[in-house]
Image (cartoon, rainbow, N blue to C red):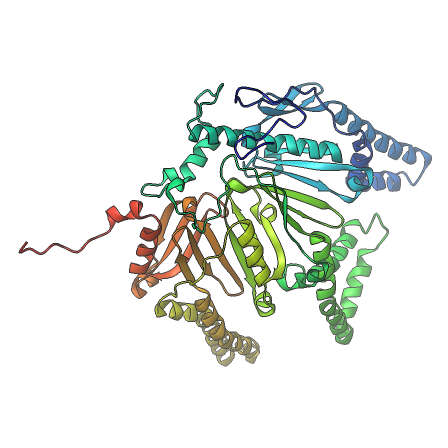
Length: 564
């Protein structure tokens, strides 16, 4: 049985005696499933539609035009076959090689030690054929071309590769655990890789004045998932289907009906000629609606009424059967109805979480949560821990999976409230004043702008007060937390060991109000989390409280008594 320091045998491989870390077993070059010869041509059809339609129309639907169109379809199938036959993947030693060889040979090498996570997704056609898309997250950033993707492996092969690739991280963690315990590791070359250096720099031992983990009390509130840890599979939460009705409250899916109408209009203009739809008909329909306001208002009302319904349907499609579980040192989030997606987050790289609430979500008592993970690309998608669920559930699940949220946020000074009110009200007062002046001097039509501006200025008062109430920061000895925002209130909870630097900024108006913004630089998530409009002394003290060894030497102390 593998313990907390031994990751066990390589999946499908061998156990190396003598405490050495086994290397990946040699594997022959493998190809994608032949079923991609069906999916790839179908996926290419949208890009082939316009050329094929053009050939048919220009040829007057003659036999020769159909022959040329058939030649294009056959050419796409041949192209897909050649791409499938010339692509192989193989695990060689400590790296994954993706090879494409036709006229020239191209090899993309992905070191296994750089792999941060492995995502497996099943689009509809792939699910029908029993294949999957496997994406490898290396934390390189940028687009997917900088990472690895195997589009068209069988579901069983995807699960096997996922286990093999993630196993290497556990083997490396076990080796480091033995090294930290004083047990030499045979075969180690002594060179610290970049990832190991990152782990050392963000660990407790790297922080000046930090208390080593071994010397902390057993009651420390930090939930650590360190090197070599093997946790049994455990399901933290499965979102009930009834809770999918909360989805439209996030606002992201509410505009789906308008997006569908805009897409249909754009499709009519783009492909109208090929589909024999005269663009003048579309323009004429729009003019007719404009000339009949009753029908235009009725269409808008129907779209507004469809917003929550269509939004809930789209939300359910993307978040169906959302499941968060812990498996072999990873947090695994699975979701999706039509396209099923599985995202794995290495738990030892999780540095905290972010709790997000919109206005409607706060009114309904629901929230969303994302993990703050080092070296994670596309964190807004891959880092999602929970969709829109009740607030108490978010706190319970995230507290169990990562750690409790920091409570008792410290309020910011009254000057911060004045700044929030000024920024929410003054711009609209300026617009209203300019509109009134224009209405008096030039045209009464400007009164149409002055009225809404005054209404928005009045609404800015409760908005500014709510923004001030949302401000807060705290530090409980192991985690720091900052919160801000009103229309989108966000609270970030970050482990102290994740802080790599501080940035204290002060604008001209902040200097006059004796305020500043304290930003904790974090090698994870968005890269920095700010406490806005903190008092000057309080902001500096907050940073010094979290990392005293960094800031204490630069703080001014009271001058000694000259008589002494």
